[in-house]
Amino acid sequence: MNTAVRLLLAISLSLTLTGHLLADTPRVLVSIKPIHSLVAGVMGGVAEPELLISGGESPHDFTLRPSDARKLNRADLVFWVGEELEAPLEHILENLAGKDRVFGLLEAPGIEQLPTREGGVWEGHAHAEDDHHHEAGDEEHREINPHIWLSPSNAARIVNLAVQELSRIDAANGSQYRANADAVLNRLGRLDSELERRVTPVLQTPYIVFHDAYPYFENHYGLNSVGSVTLSPERIPGARRVHELRVKVRALGARCVFSEPQFEPKLVRTITEGTDAGIGVLDPLGANLKTGEDAYFKLMHNLADALVDCLGSSSREQ
View 1 (tube, one colour):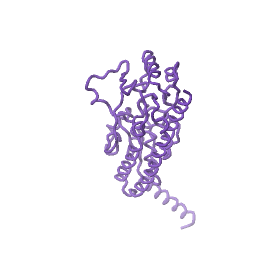
View 2 (tube, rainbow, N blue to C red; view 1 turned 90 degrees about the vertical axis):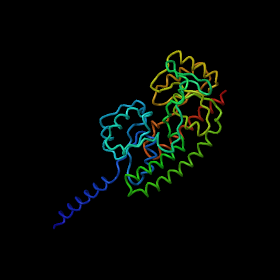
View 3 (tube, helix red, strand yellow; view 1 turned 135 degrees about the horizontal axis):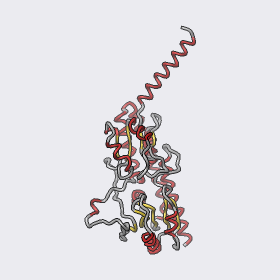
View 4 (cartoon, rainbow, N blue to C red; view 1 turned 30 degrees about the vertical axis):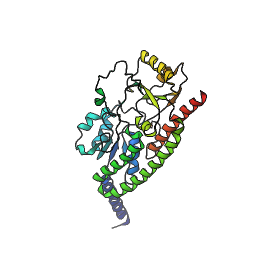
């Protein structure tokens, strides 16, 4: 057998073995960037999970493309939050063959759940959307707020759930997943301490968010959010409601009103006209962050920085 033939056989064998190894690596698809970041940390050195929804799209109403459907169909494991967040995924995941491949985090054991609050002003100033009313006794039927990843405690639980599910479909790499998870959990502990110190100066300062995406972050650190611009980010409030919000901003002494990069900021500028409130941007999804295991940590730091920068500067100006 001459040298050229030996070389071709070696290359062929190498490609065959590589293909076999790749086939044995689980294909994991994650719906949104913050969860993808946590799962990527757990999978380090084994494989890279795919991200379905970019940070620039709203998971509430993104458009599912044919290429997305193909990704879902070929995935060995899909992590998503639930229909309360990624509504367009609900029906396709229901029909996905092998439902044990789909893992919804919102209803997973150990995840802290908080109810969705009404749009408008909170803290005893209940105010529903102009065309949205709750009957007496509706509280027990309120939806769960799906933005669970914005609590470091829930993030730690998501990491442990990822280890559980990945080890179930890929036991051979179970020890690697566990070791990676331990490193991520240690990093989450440090993050939590850093953020607690960062937001302490503005804990009592009132502010209004664009929509109710932040109760997990706010509850965890004891922040003083007093309301939201809209109940649902897809529903823009009318002129009467904008006027009412402007009055409430002044009455409650809200230091800042926050917009989000996924939605038009002009509305927030209109609401703050004639008030002393500043304008900031909070991003619960990491729209402009690079995908990867660092994204979650940068997202959380960015939230804390945005709050402190706006609330702190507004406080000094008054």
